[in-house]
Image (cartoon, rainbow, N blue to C red; front, top):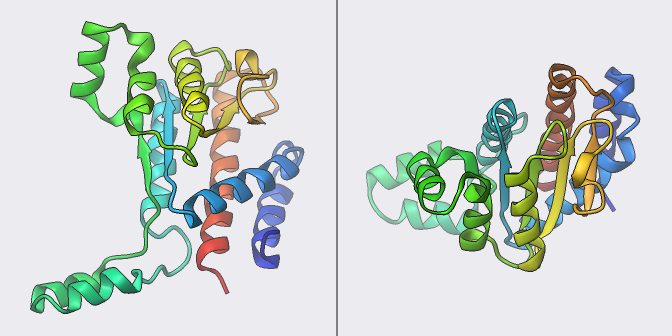
Length: 215
């Protein structure tokens, strides 16, 4: 069960946009999955193409460093840095608590090697095969729900015992039935879907942050 404050954050974001409000239950489930994953030492792998790759970068940015709340550095690392030297004390005072999230679309040299050697449709599946662990989560972003490289990544993720979340458009496309949880923006127009995706993942990131650092 989510904290009362976390529930309130989800509700507030949903109240701002009627199209997002339709997804309140799915957003709450997404927050629960991610919070449990991070609390258990898991990581989030995110992938998408074009604007969805940019959204993946945005999501990672909100998770790896503080988004809306202060995030004190975890005590074991903070204490170890403070024991080092004066620079360690500076680091301990400046760094923030972060969540392990990786945009699979950010590794240009690796992706071009996969394109050249294996084929472009495997750029994300290869990385999930390498990085993914049981208990991790893959977040695949595709406005159509039909991006082959994202679908392949989801298939590998499930084979590795990972949960899969899809951020997509109104119909869900081929993601429907293949991903464990879908967050379907209520539109079939790419730019409108992307606008809604921004509102959806900001709600998710704010709520996850509160669940782990709030109160």
